[in-house]
Amino acid sequence: MNEPVDVAGRVRPVNDRPVDYNGDYVLHWMTSARRAEYNHALDRSAAWARALNKPLIVLEAIGLQHPWASSRFHSFIIQGMADQMSQFQKYGVRYLPYIEKKPGEGKGLIEALSVNACLVVTDDWPCFITPKIVKAAGEKSAVHLEAVDIAGLLPVAAVPKVFARAYHFRLWHEKNLHLHLENLSQESPLVDIPLEPEIDSPILSASILDKWKMASEEELQNPELFLGDLPIDQEVKPVKQHPGGAVEANKRLDNFVSNLIDRYGEDRNQPEKVSTSTLSSYLHFGHISSQQIWQSAADADAGENGSAFIDQLITWRELGFNFCHYHDEIDTWESLPEWARKTLDEHADDVRPVTYSLEEMEAAETHDEIWNSAQRQLVGEGIIHNYLRMLWGKKILEWSSHPKEALNTMIHLNNRWALDGRDPNSYSGITWCLGRYDRAWGPERPIFGKIRYMSSDNTARKLRIKPYLERWSTGNLFSS
Ligand SMILES: Cc1cc2nc3c(=O)[nH]c(=O)nc-3n(C[C@H](O)[C@H](O)[C@H](O)COP(=O)(O)OP(=O)(O)OC[C@H]3O[C@@H](n4cnc5c(N)ncnc54)[C@H](O)[C@@H]3O)c2cc1C
Image (cartoon, rainbow, N blue to C red; front, side):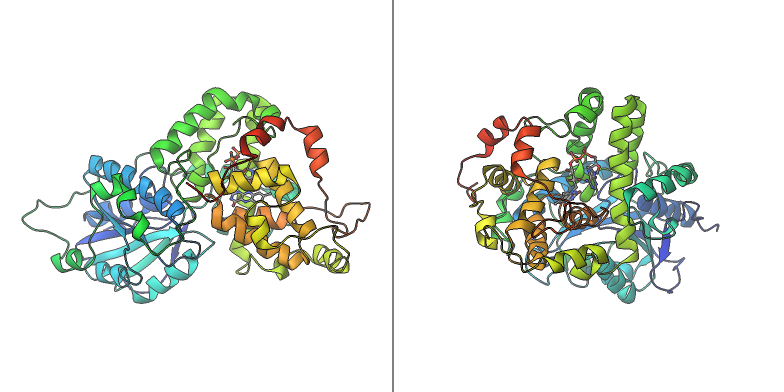
C-alpha cells in the first residue's frame, strides 16, 4: 500500500499511534472546514480511503460548551450541516451530523468512533478552541490522528516568521505564494472513493449510534424546533439576512464576482449599500474556502478592483493566521506591539471626555449616533460594515476608562455578536485598533497617544452615511 504523500505541506501528526490497516473506515472529523469541496483535509482523507481501500465516514459535530455558544452560531452551523447532508448523500459517503443537546452528552464520541477506524483526519486551525480539542482528541484516539491545515492559500507553517506589518507580509507572499498554488485543493475530492458495503454488513456499531443520536434531516432543516431549548446564549438570535451553508456562500460569491467586484475599490467603504463580498462569516465557519474565492476573483479579471479584493483576502486575512500560528496568547494586552503598549500606558490616566460601561455600549446607548448604528447592526445582523468597524473599535478605546478594558470590551462585543467573530481576524481587527500592524502617528493625542485616531465627524464627511443611520437608528435591540 502506498501511503498518501503530503505534497502540500499541510499535514501534522497529532499523536504517534499507528494507522490500523485492518480498521473498517477512515474517519474524517470536520471541525473548521465545514464543506465538501475545495478542502485540503478532505483531500487527505479521500487519499487515505483510496490508498487503504476503505470507506470514508465524515463526522461533523457541534457542542454546547464552546465560549460564546449561541443560537445565532448554532443556527448558522446547522444550516451548513443541512447542505452537507445532501452533498455527502450525492457522493454516497456516510455523513454523521451530531448536535449535542445536553452539556457533556457528546463526550467520548471521537474516541468511540476511532476504535474501529484505520485513522482519524481532522482540521488544523490555529485559533479559538480548535488547537486544544484536537490535542485532547489525539491523546484519546485509539489510532493515528493527523490534522490538516485548512486555513488559507498559504500553509501557515510555510511562512517562516511573524510579520508585524502587512506591507512586509505582502512582499513575502508575492514572492512565495506561487509555490503553493501548485498544490491546490480539489473541487470534488470525493469522486471515486471506496463506498461503504451494503447495509447487511454495517461498519458502524449500533451501540455508538444508540448512545450518540445523529441529527435527522428534519432537525437540520428546521433547527428552530429545538434550538430554543439548548442551554446556550439565547439572546444572540439567528440572523435571517445571513443564513449559513455552502449553498448560500456560493450564491454570494457568484453575485460578488458577477456584479460587485468591478466597483470594489470605489464602493467598499460606503456603508449604505452592500458592495463587498460579505463572505467573512462563511470563511470563518468553513462553508467556503479562500482558494475558491481567490480563483473566482482571479477569473473575473477585474483589474485594480480585483487586486484590491485579493489583497484583503490574502494579505490581511492570512496575516491573522500568521500571528496565531506563532502566538498562543492572541487576545492579551501583552500580545500588542511594545510601542503601542507604551504609548497607551502613558495615556492611560488621561481624562476621558465621556466613559461608557460595557452594558451601555452593548445596548448602543452612547451619544454618538454613528457608533450606536454600527453597534445595532452588529447586534441585529451579526456584522458591521468594515470601515465603521474600525471607527467602532477606536471609539471603544476612547470611551473606556483604561485601554485594557477597551480590549476586553471589543473582544466581548465582537465575539458574542459577530457571525465572523472568534476568528484570527477578530483579533487582528481588534488589536489593529490598538496599534498592531500599524505605525506610530502624530500628533500625539490624549488617550490615544501615538495610536492612529479616527473620528465620527470625519467619517460622516467621508462616507454617505445618512441612509445607513436611518436604517439602524431605532429598534428594540434585543428583540427578534
Ligand atoms: C474592530 C474590528 C474587528 C474585526 N473583526 C473581524 C472578525 O471578527 N472576523 C473577520 O473575519 N474580520 C474581522 N475584521 C476585519 C474586517 O472587518 C472583515 O473581515 C470584513 O469587514 C468582512 O467583510 P467582507 O467579507 O464583506 O469583506 P471583503 O471586503 O469582501 O473582503 C474579503 C475577505 O477578505 C478578508 N478581509 C477583508 N478585510 C479584512 C481585514 N481588514 N482584516 C482581515 N481580513 C480581512 C475577510 O476574510 C473578507 O471576508 C475586523 C476589523 C475590525 C476593525
